[in-house]
Length: 246
Ligand SMILES: [Ca+2]
Ligand SMILES: [Ca+2]
Ligand SMILES: [Ca+2]
Image (cartoon, rainbow, N blue to C red; front, side, top):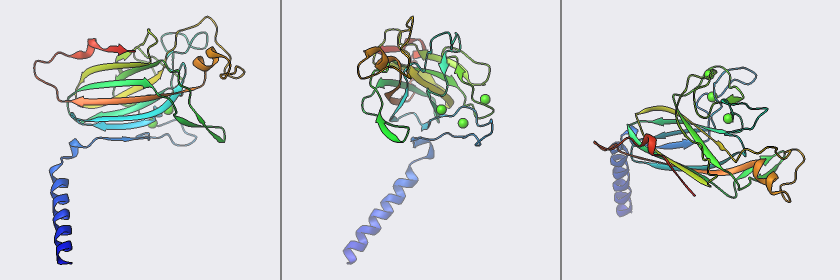
């Protein structure tokens, strides 16, 4: 009995030491939550972020969810450049970096992601052409509008465009490495398949028998992996060196 007590006491002492040895900035977290949700029926809360992420400069985190097939770049005539992103069918990450870091973000197609369709659980499709855009700042005030610019600023928000992965090649994953200062950032994730002359009607086409219907409509799964590492002195800013992989 005494032995057990001693062991427990050692474990709790060790736990206490470990807890105190980890500075708050070393903790990374990811939540399926909006940092400032809008009040029901009111026009506030800014962007309806799906994710709130916090990272220091030596972490990896990942998460999965689903977006609309063309959410990053909807076609005309409903969407005319430059604001071709569909805010509500994209996913938004409120990203907080607690230290300057090299940040590597990968967004890839992911099979088997469940979602609620009416009163049933369905599986998201697996033909996403993923893309994402990075902006500085969070938008927690006023209304969220329907459209956003995936390659620049837009007038209903104060977040500032930094860079994106347009994925013109139609790859199944995209990656970007970028050196970022500690601070808050917004990341928009969506789908950007090739723009067609005409699109299948999402309300009437059959994804089981029509390949274009499957790829260009509906919800599609994605996986994100974010890795941070300390900024090395004399390292090059990788801002312009983003790459995409098949
Ligand atoms: Ca919000
Ligand atoms: Ca949202
Ligand atoms: Ca706003």
